Length: 140
Image (cartoon, rainbow, N blue to C red; front, side, top):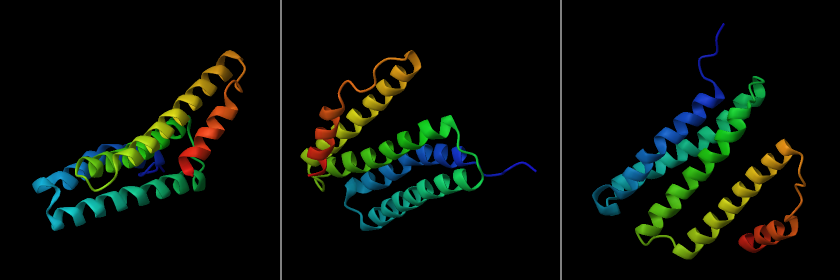
């Protein structure tokens, strides 16, 4: 029997639905309380779907390389879209958005570099102290 709902399908749906959350945030200039509640609900459901796809992948032994790649992309897109949207509306400080996004870009680029180094058998530990410091500094 074929599985109807795969973890990767949930992750792709999360990525596809992010623009609807952004639309809801900005609807009517971002000042409509009804649309703010709708945006909150969209982001809440998308956040829950992140837990669901991970649980489903592990429970059904459907962990895949695609899922390992897409899930962090979806997470970063979800959080980034919310922070950038709220910063544009003046409801979230730009400096926090910039620090968090810089941290996420740094982590992602380090992971990509680490993956490519594994593929080519190169040294993966070129900048570990720098990234550790940046992670610490961004969480302080």
